[in-house]
Amino acid sequence: MTIDEARLTITSAIQTIYDGDEANNIAALLIEHITNLPLTERIMKKNDVLPSKQEVLLKQSVMRLEEHEPIQYVINEAWFAGMKFYVDKHVLIPRPETEELVDWIVSDWRLDNNKGTIGKRQEASFKSQSRWHSGNSKLLDVGTGSGCIAIALKVALPNIEMWACDVSDEALNVARLNADSLHATIDFVPMNFLDADERKQLPRVDLLVSNPPYVPQRENAEIKKNVNEFEPPPALFVPDDDVMIFYKAIADFGREKLNDEGCIYVEIHESFGPEVKKVFQCNGYSTVELRKDLQGKDRMVKVTLP
Image 1 (cartoon, rainbow, N blue to C red):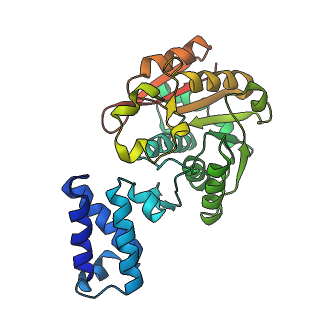
Image 2 (spheres, one colour):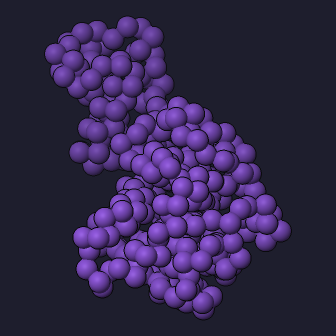
């Protein structure tokens, strides 16, 4: 089988699962992973025959794709914030909208560094972030999973002290692997964040960020097979009768251990923006900002203490 025949084999096998562009992208990712050849070389060598070991791996991988397994799990790779992360069935696959959450934090940080150039209208907002530059700023990522948020922030803002927690030991093993490979120093803590007693072991922080589980269990049947049958359910779903469970825990933690004028940034379900805002407003947070993602969906909330 040649490289070009391999491409056609992949796209043909998954054409009923993914549309044309996505199928082509998946084929490109898989062939690059198997051959370790960049696009230009794959084009130049499209008529080269795959070695037998590569052909066997290709066939095994195609079988997994036909079962709707995400390409990221098949090749154990996902890109986030310009970095390659190891992923497996124990962690969620990083999403572009989560990159937007990270970008928001980094943008606020950098604007604070240049606050002399901004207008008075924004000055109060940026003043609240001055603690971040004190040389001992602590940031916490709740439900870190693959570690993508924590690592991206630590790489972009190397002077911060980054903490991250997760209930899953398997997920933390993945996060530690990624932190080591991407040279990010992070304090990982195994814990159930929903347990108020366990939260006591965490330090006071200047910023908390989280992409917590937020999909109601009732929506399970509406989610694509490549998500609900492969990505870890505890990282996705919350009880139908308490969909705000993680935001309430985050708000409680912030009241106890968020430093004065600290900030919280969270990703949210597109349908629950008002409900998330209410959770924080009812807990005394002075400013609650709801932001849409690039698709025009309510996806992120930022809150600050008085």
